[in-house]
Image (cartoon, rainbow, N blue to C red; front, side, top):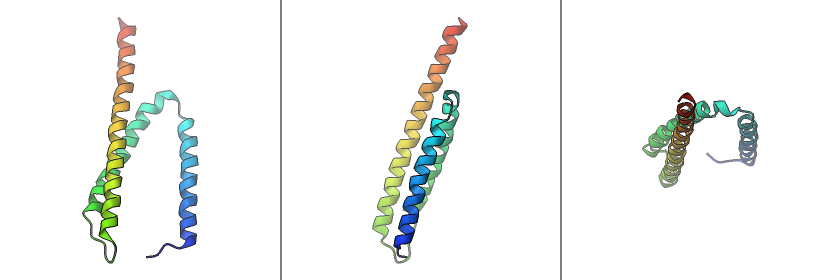
Length: 106
């Protein structure tokens, strides 16, 4: 499987459009919805972790398995950092909300 110039340009175009769309969607989210969205992002990162683990154990016909294993490892590390960081941010946000309720209810 070889990557043609048209496929490369198409992939880069989709990537850039996804960046713009993601930025526009996230910037329009009200602050009260950030915690549920972070939980959804953590779930997606969990799916990425499972996919990277499956990919790291797969064999590829006629492909360079060292490159595939390296990319799977990079994906695993990045998704793990994203999931752990997301859970830490979610926990901090929920702690801020709980602290505000405790102070206001006394």
